[in-house]
Length: 84
Image 1 (tube, rainbow, N blue to C red):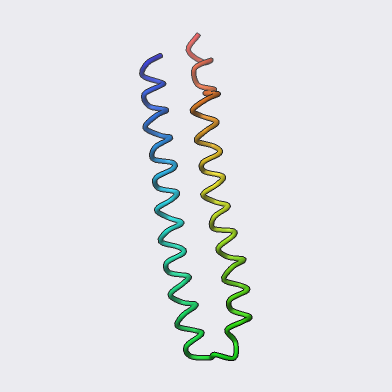
Image 2 (cartoon, rainbow, N blue to C red):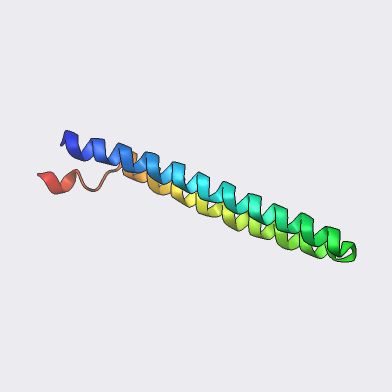
């Protein structure tokens, strides 16, 4: 049972950490592209900014879902019931 709890703790840490890392990289790339495209065509900046904020919201939702799954595995671990 301790093995399952330990592996769950490691997997929860990886889930949250890699999810945050991926979202951070995605936001960085997306922000850089927004700045590049706004510098090339300033008249399109409001439209691009709207799409940027929608995309950021979707990227953050991925991280939030990862945290929710991690909390589920932390507090209501379904794998402990399989040991009995």
